[in-house]
Image (tube, rainbow, N blue to C red; front, side, top):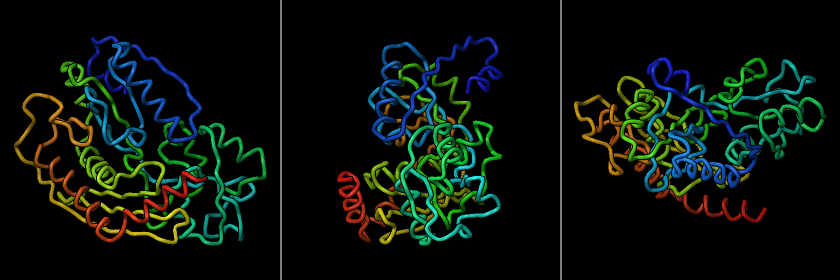
Length: 316
């Protein structure tokens, strides 16, 4: 993000502050997000960069996502133990143990690959890869392809999972820049980083998740695509073991219009995103698509599936 801003605004002085946390659970991620927002609130920093999938669908008053960058590959990736080089999930031996800390991944993969067993693995990327490489506990682990790519570890990717195998998390693969709503100059500066298609895809995904009242404690997955001025959204909810699920696809037109936001305020946000340079009608259509798909799944029993999944997860 800093590199892009320096190219666009060579006269602006940018200082980067990096805090390292070893986060392994959504509660810790929430605490980390809150700490960064506290720094924003205290005017210690002017903008904060997050993985969009870690940001809640409702932001605290006074904050907004001022930029959503072009999405990296949003899919999940398989990283095999060296002893399994050349294999894939389909060809791994019966009862091979796969490491993942994600309920969403485990629920989908248990259903798709019933011959495999799944076990929690915690830690950051370095820690997880070390656990895979130095022990015999796991035959493979599942990680976000985008994270591996950003670290320059694409060579560790043995298999990228397609949507039929495993749909991704809301916002996965996208970076978000969070700013204070009142800082109009900062908001205008970072807004040039918005990638319109990614913005619309992520608004639809976040609206879907918010209307479901989902989160990282329940298995919710999505897949979005923009093609021929149509936005396609597939959304699904799962039981923890993947045996019970609901999955549907809807689409909407996002033909660009002439409407742009007049000024920036809390009312301009859509599921926490302010994108004044993306047509308003397109954003409205994307948000409505997410809500409509969530309502469809809820009408078919999604709430019951998610309630049971949440209760079982809380009891673990």
